[in-house]
Every structure is written in structure tokens, then in C-alpha cells.
Length: 120
Image (cartoon, rainbow, N blue to C red; front, top):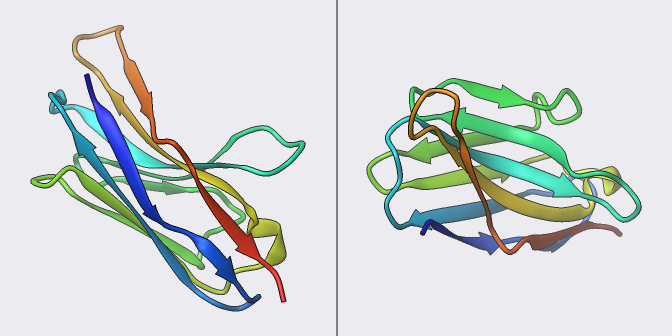
């Protein structure tokens, strides 16, 4: 069973920065992607950033140019550096891992979530 443990998050003023980190443990198939989703109150969970094990990174339009995600395949960790934070970035951020054990099959895992609040 794969487990995801997040760290980081907290309260920051608009324009500030925060870094989130996530470490995956357990047996993970080599073809996978790790990343971050977020969910604000009253809204659906949305993709923030995702990095494949091959290094392809995808960002939500709302965070492009402000957030950077990177991963260490050897350590099964993924980071999210968040700069120029805005109040609308306030949400619970969830680490996510999806693996593809064989064609047509996917396993999805979630972290427990960490609160990010952007407020003056």
C-alpha cells in the first residue's frame, strides 16, 4: 500500500511564498505521476501541478508562472514551491500519486491534505 505524507503549508500574507513537500512510501510502479490538487471551501478539488516520472510537468493556468513543482524519483518525493501567493490560493492542498501497473489500469493515492491560507 502506498502512503503519502505531506509537510509545509500554513498562513502567509499575499505576495508571500510557501513550500509544500510530499514523500511517498511503499511499493510504487515505475510509470507514475505525482503532484498536487487543492480544494477550497465550496469548490471542487482541482489539479494544481503534476510531474510524471519522465519529468513532464503540468500546471493549472491559475498558477503558471507562480508555482513550481519538482520531484526526486529516487526518493519518491514531490515539492511545490508557491510564490506570489494570492488570497484565492487559499485551500487544502493534497498530494496525489497515480501509478499505472499495466495498460488500462491506474491506482490513485492521496495525502491527508495540508491547509494553505493566504491572508493579511
